[in-house]
Amino acid sequence: MSVQPEAPEAAEPVLLRDDADGITTLTLNRPASGNSLSHRLVHDLQGEFDRIAGDETVRVVVITASGRLFCTGHDLNESLATESGEAKRASNLVCNRMMQSIVESPKPVIAKVRGTATAAGCELVASCDLAIASTEARFATPGVNIGLWCLTPQVALSRAVGRKHAMQMLLTGKLIDAETAMRFGLINEAVPPEALDQTVAGLATVIAAKSPFAVALGKRSFYRQYDMDRAQAYDYVADQMVRAFQAEDAREGIAAFLEKRPPVWKGR
Image (cartoon, rainbow, N blue to C red):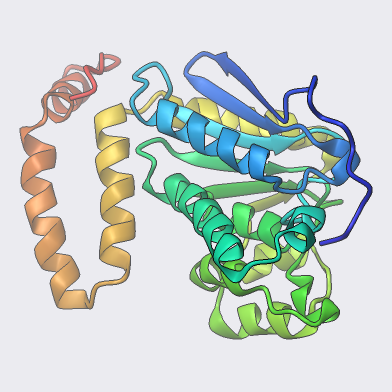
């Protein structure tokens, strides 16, 4: 999280989108500002997740970034320029909604991290369903270093890693390396820089080949049952099992398995 000179971005898109083979890649494109989350970038991310939610051609989403850094958090130049409490709260709620849209998206979202992810950038990684990072990546929630506390990042962070690991990051503000982030549970894998693209592409391709109906139902059920007590969770998934088995994709998948052929998914 750092205050940096604001680069002009009127003519340059702050978010890039690429679609190929059912995989949508969203690239944060503010490298001169550490890919910090400006109001415009948050707005554009929200717009893409709104569109992707109803796009049947999209099976998997990958979030990555241009330049040396993944995301340095909120744009502090904009934060300092927002003086009223009401305006600050409003902008925070907009960003919170965008983060929640990642969790609520029916599409699996993978963070591909090459570089440093701090504060809300770390929150962005924690909000994704999966995260693969280069061994050169670093992560931190450094608000405490400048007299703040990473209040919104702690919501996603504390749900992705253990309580004591989250508190360690929040209290110290120190950067942790990719191996530590993997041990904490913030990321799934730490791979050599030259293997990052291939690893993420392989993972996304495997997921994109699954039933989109099963994946969407499964992702939604995973997050909903997570905060329930055990008995409530079992009751909830019992109802979801009925839905799953009644779906066309389940019937097709079982038939394909028994007939030893590739399934043809309908998405319903």
